[in-house]
Length: 83
Figure 1 (tube, helix red, strand yellow):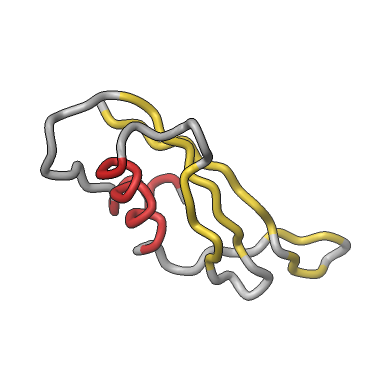
Figure 2 (spheres, rainbow, N blue to C red):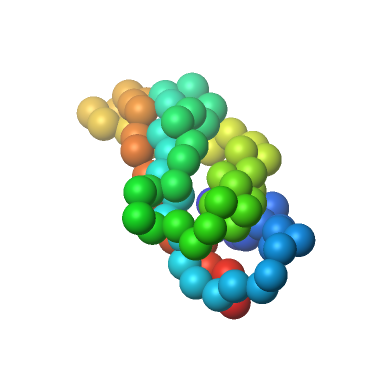
């Protein structure tokens, strides 16, 4: 999952910044992604936050989590680093 997201991550065309953004999203039982957004107070600036959200949005479906052998919705928080 991290490799797919990092492949899609593009630095925005604004002054260079360094730091970490925390992106939260839900992997639905179907594997589709929903509710993609930056965790409040864990972003850099709007352009970098939008780039992080776009990287997750461009990702394909994921394998959903399972509980009791059945696929379930799972909320994930992923750190994204700009160096």
